[in-house]
Length: 371
Image 1 (spheres, rainbow, N blue to C red):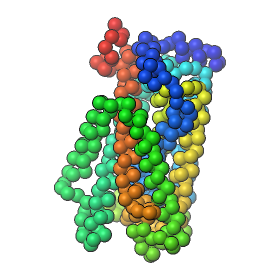
Image 2: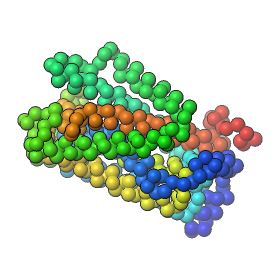
Image 3: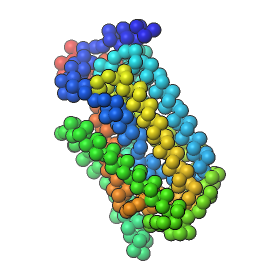
Image 4: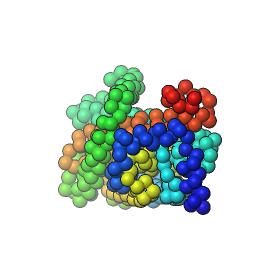
């Protein structure tokens, strides 16, 4: 079985993929280890904006127990995906920067690979949109909190479509960064991850101090309430008026764990992909699951239900030593996630066009290939 998978993976490689391999070897040298090539990129992709802006609100609606089950179920599904991809990676070679698409198309066939690859590309694009809107919402919440502190009832909107305009500016600027300097995306990826981890640390430390009564941050003592969010309490959203249910909460939780394929997209830069991809991805999933569970129980057991529902950015309000660390950190981490999506998607769509399975992608094929 292992020999057949290896033969399928190596012999079915088209000329376009071989050129990608040579280019990746020349540019990157395949020198990344498990930590820097797989674990940290996966960690950065999984620890996203939902952790800071939505997870506490989901906890206030579904309760700590149900939210824990949702996170565990989502993580379990990613572990099934991890086990399948690991079995393929350890028995073959990844000769393309398209990562997951190359693995699927060279083992299950190009037709199935393009079908799943197109869905993966659309999902990657929608994730990028989510990160853009997350950055815009973080700015909006920060502006609203600033004016509220001084007694002004500012809604956070400068004009009617200010969030959409800000989101478009972010998209254009990030696309320009990817187009003119892809190497800088990799260069600053560790910086974005450090910012994300620092924000998580400040949030957890601040909530712990708030629970002990040592530091209130921007909250009040009456916001401290223990064991209030253990069970579900579905109520209308203070901003939208809609009443969520368990399935809408699952729809918000599941994107938290979908960044596990980030390490496989860097397979050409790894010293030993067959060893680094399974190991690094597994420990990234376990680490992020523990972080999510820690935030769920830490905030759910110490902050009142009403505060978690009303303050969507309570992770910044309670952070220590200052809320601006988390507010700026979330925005910067969103920029890093956007750059990651924008730098991965072109490799994926280029690989699909090079295989010449989907005719409408022919205009995206690199020059000199498929003649």
